[in-house]
Image (cartoon, rainbow, N blue to C red; front, side, top):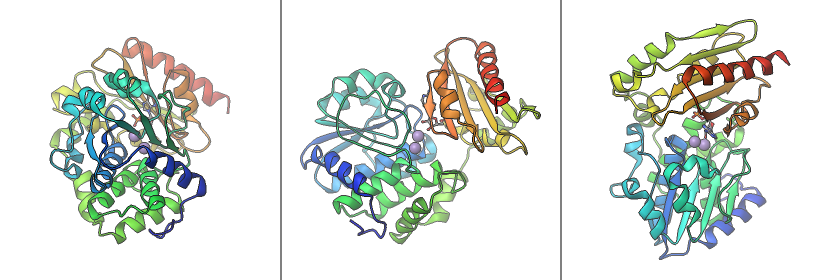
Length: 337
Ligand code: AMP
Ligand code: MN
Ligand code: MN
């Protein structure tokens, strides 16, 4: 159980055995993650795709929304069948849901997943989850879902090749904000170290993930940061994506990743928010905090969730109305502490 140099807690090893029990060679498996996949969602499913393919399973990635351009370098040719995701899920013997435990975050795939034969889940969110029953390797204290996929492979003695290692490294790198956030545990760094020992090149990954931006991403950031409002006395700051800005800059939601770190980076700010009008008429809010501000709790009040220091929700109504509601709750929350 310590073949990768990092011991796997007994509880995770047991959960890994249960997940592996539905992943017999020959089976057809669909791998999926939450809408607007991030580095952890993509990294975890790509790594699992390699692990399962090497074991003789027929695996396909079937996501509710396209994989962002910046992670395409990880995806093996032919592995991503998200264009026909619902059909992949219907045809699969097993669905593995990664980096989310909520049906509501699986977009249009929720129905197909509810009707699946078997649904396994590997995740590190706090939420109880609303997926159909099935084996679960869920640990909120894990830095990233990629850490749990590493544990799965370690517990089962499945060799992690260099391609899988690279994908897992991207998951841990991106979910810890490049090893800066509170989830940068000693263990997360040990796992990252074990992955480097498998030949991962951190500089080349940095370049692919963070230094290959289209110009529009930077121009979009300029516009969003222009909207910054700071309520210094409360420790609250927020930015708003101008409604047509993504289109004008040929950008996607992925290009907004990290912008909310700027309002959070202001001295004295304990709670930072990013507001964005979604194409479906709803309003997406990203919550980030420092110290003891629990944004999972705040986001939960609006039907969302996430982690203590990074959470999200999507609300009905206009951008202005959603903003008013969330800001009122945020001010009240901050005034109380
Ligand atoms: P984001 O603000 O989209 O970067 O998300 C921050 C964290 O909150 C991630 O762990 C997300 O998975 C989670 N999250 C984002 N949006 C939602 C939502 N609508 N419902 C539940 N969790 C969410
Ligand atoms: Mn995620
Ligand atoms: Mn994650």
